[in-house]
Length: 213
Ligand SMILES: Cc1cc2nc3c(=O)[nH]c(=O)nc-3n(C[C@H](O)[C@H](O)[C@H](O)COP(=O)(O)O)c2cc1C
Image 1: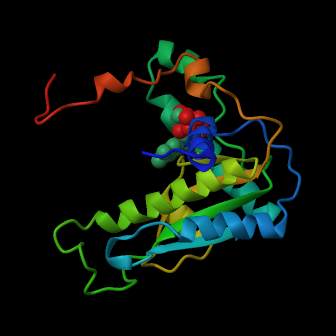
Image 2: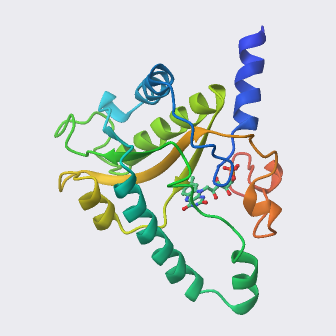
């Protein structure tokens, strides 16, 4: 099979992608770059071509500060459930770059889009949610190719974020993504660097014909 420079750069982007928290410069994202990144997200596959995603770009600093306060409170909730040793490892780990990044992008899931006849979702309701996650991954890779960092924040209560950015009742918030120019992308994930957890070898998760230990 033929491989060309585009293939190599795709793999290079996949392996260079990093969850970013502490590396944001806060510089603005050029409008055309943001548009390209969002277009890449919107080009994702989706069950029944339902395209069940929505993107809310949050620049407003007051909204971002409010969200950060909520996230830090949820961090404490998580921390409170850890034993002393895990709490010690967790303490220096940053979990967000909400104010330091250039913008937040809230990604929502609208299960009503294309409903009721969503082709391929009749047996697996989650297929809609999977589609939204693919849009997020497209966004993440496109942003990486553009030299931007992306950090996924999930330390929040869905109801809080829905109200903060005025999502309608039927749209489920799936992610707050911190996006913006970065000084660099670390080669090692933060969680590995801090000794929280390591990436498994591929063979630990690879099975043939039937699941095997
Ligand atoms: C669904 C999801 C939720 C995540 N939530 C957070 C989060 O709240 N805070 C954070 O710092 N990183 C979060 N991450 C990033 C992961 O910690 C990160 O992807 C993982 O440690 C591997 O690092 P890498 O993305 O740099 O390869 C999340 C990632 C995913 C896919």
